[in-house]
Length: 229
Ligand SMILES: NC(=O)c1ccc[n+]([C@@H]2O[C@H](COP(=O)([O-])OP(=O)(O)OC[C@H]3O[C@@H](n4cnc5c(N)ncnc54)[C@H](OP(=O)(O)O)[C@@H]3O)[C@@H](O)[C@H]2O)c1
Image (tube, rainbow, N blue to C red):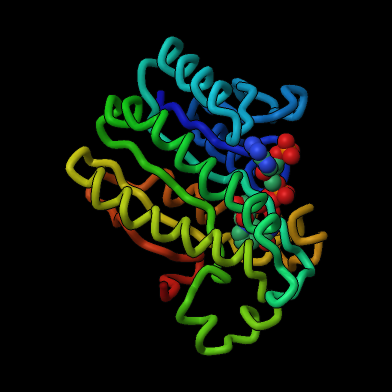
């Protein structure tokens, strides 16, 4: 049975990813900050991605219980500058956002790499957004102009860069690393403004988490296809 770890699995899209991977027969370790929020049928683990000790404990638990990790979904994120114009965004908005969605991803991924290597054909899925696309932002795409946020969007651009660097680094180990955009979903993050459900948003992450061997790596896509970097 394959083993998956999903960060931020207590609500929103992460909770749906955890549920859908469990529905496919995977053993799902649900990274949560409140164990009572873990979806039914998952193995909860207390995991604040900004807490080095908690991340170390989660890696130890997965190692001791399963000896490997087949799927890592870096889903946890915050949007520190929701509703703040780029001209008003501060370094504190940046720090809060990067702490979870960039530095947290590095802490978790680094801790899990030995377990991912042990799995042989592991997959990493990074939850990003089309707002991360420098190409679409420069082209003044309507959605990217409407949701212009200095901290959140640039943190996701950084996460896209991490995706490519990890993909190159881990290709030799058969680990596929991809960035996905779930689309605009009605969750707490968006103030429930999105038009898609969290379950619909989860689908593309599940697809990339269950890629066959030799599948794509270092890509950025939504359900509709590739997104320009
Ligand atoms: N919703 C969208 O339209 C949309 C679009 C594009 C990309 N995304 C991305 O999809 C992912 C999920 O978004 P969402 O809409 O489901 O967001 P959400 O409803 O706001 O949920 C965010 C999740 O991140 C967790 N989290 C926050 N800080 C954390 C920390 N320090 N350590 C561990 N977990 C932490 C939260 O846990 P707690 O419950 O403990 O706070 C929660 O489970 C994010 O990466 C987001 O950027 C979302």
